[in-house]
Image 1 (cartoon, rainbow, N blue to C red):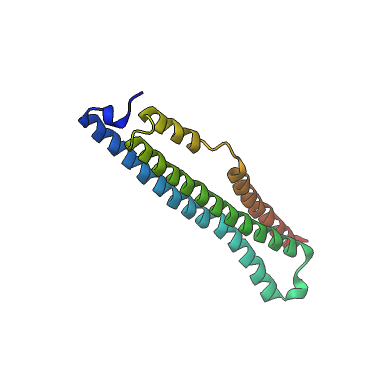
Image 2: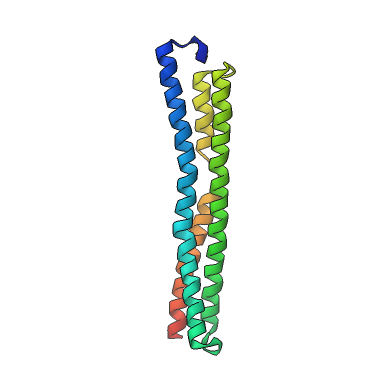
Length: 156
């Protein structure tokens, strides 16, 4: 295991470049996950909710049956889950970025070895907590079930 100060100068430049690239990647992940969540899960559920609200507004409240209301509730639940997913992914990627900054600083000040720097990042980057997947799957499921319920409402 080699400390940063023990590497030859040409290899130090390479490690600094690799660390800087990882930093940029983590920052981009934060933006990408946020954008992906907003564009897909939030917008699809919001579109479904707006469609139901528009129908109820145009047809009159008396025309709305329990299926319309159920579909609306499902779409709103999807919006909430998409928002939670967005916040949690943002928090997770921001945490990765913060920890990477700390670890790379520790590496530069010879507190940790080069291999340890990457091992710490690997351990954090492979997040075993499935809550992100479950929230995303639930938001998508709310959209699918809400859409099917909304379609059913027109034939009931």
